[in-house]
Length: 174
Image 1 (cartoon, rainbow, N blue to C red):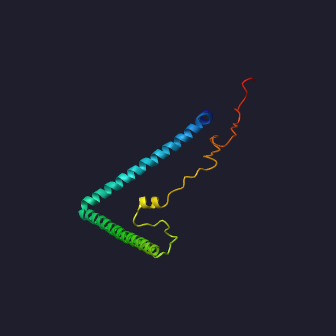
Image 2 (image 1 turned 135 degrees about the vertical axis):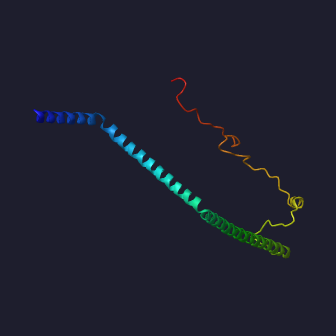
């Protein structure tokens, strides 16, 4: 009878286990995944802490290591600042050259205009602005247009036609 009771016990336990898995299988599966992820995160944190402690103990033992790192960082910053300064100097020189070239072109254009040679590149170039003299030299003719401000979007000023489309939508009587 001993062997039969063991077999019955094993069958009943297997049946119970299958019943629990069928009812709560997905919950168990996702719970296992969550526990695994939490354990991975904790182990990573513990490793990083131990690594930091190891570095801190090395730094306490070797202060020259800290000094060397600081000097290396200062040297890198100094080198980067020198490169930036060199680029700024090149940029300023380039801007001065461009301004000088523009100034020379304006002078050439002005000289050409004084000699009677017109330059199409700078048709309105005038180094000495004389707004009152230029407006007095060329008065604008006061001419009325025949259409008088016609705008098809507004509906006015278009002549004798004043048709507008009717209202959209259903009529009021229907």
